[in-house]
Amino acid sequence: MKRFHIHVGVKDLEKSVQFYSTLFGQKPSKLKEDYAKWMLDDPRVNFAISTRAGENGVDHLGLQVDEESELAEITERLKKADLGVYGEGETTCCYAESKKAWVQDPAGIAWEAYRTMTDAEVFHGEPNSEAASCCAPDESESGCCG
Image (cartoon, rainbow, N blue to C red; front, side, top):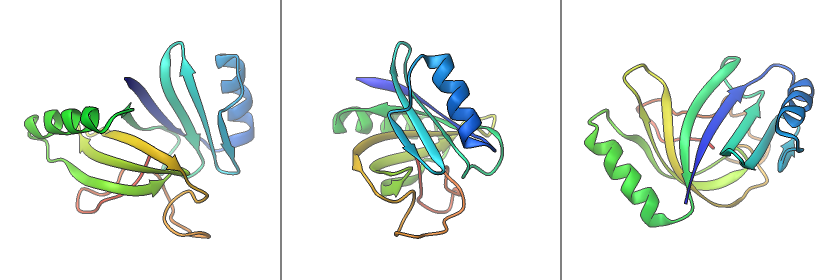
């Protein structure tokens, strides 16, 4: 089953968590010092915020899947769109270990298709890493996030 994903960059995580918790009528399912995530069923969305995004506002969009076959299907569709799929493979980002594929749409918006395999104790990479931002990698490198 698929779930729409939205990642928003924020300046003040505490105020943003308060706002979105009120809006969604529930507390985040994951809360860290620089990141929060709500796994909503109505609407079915993975809504995440962090202070790690390069700018405030929508950082990237995506489709989260439960099954490897769903990820393979979406990745193939992205490749058929001929927009240059990049950042394909396994990564640790946004406190999760995932398998992903990235693309930029014609408007330049980063999109990811991914399957989360397990939670991670670090935001990105190694413990105590100062990896600056989530999430979309440069087209030339594999990367993060979701």
